[in-house]
Image 1 (cartoon, rainbow, N blue to C red):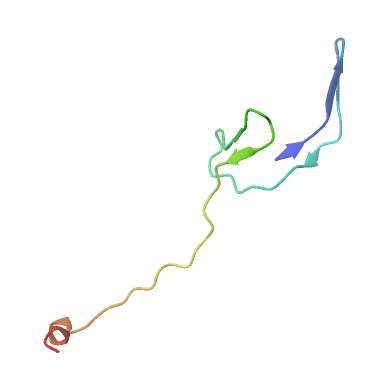
Image 2 (image 1 turned 135 degrees about the horizontal axis):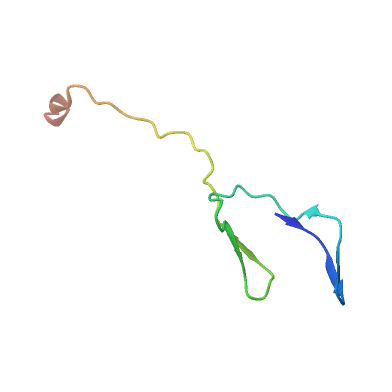
Length: 68
């Protein structure tokens, strides 16, 4: 997300230097964020962090375990 100062006077429009506001991992290219009505907060749709896959447990001869 980038930010810049914008000012207008009459028909002139001045745009200041662009600077990073914050970084995101946006999940969708269409409307990945929204701004609160007061302009103080952002709601950002992001991709989940890459997590390690859950381990798989294989139980062999499980009927024998039921008899114990």
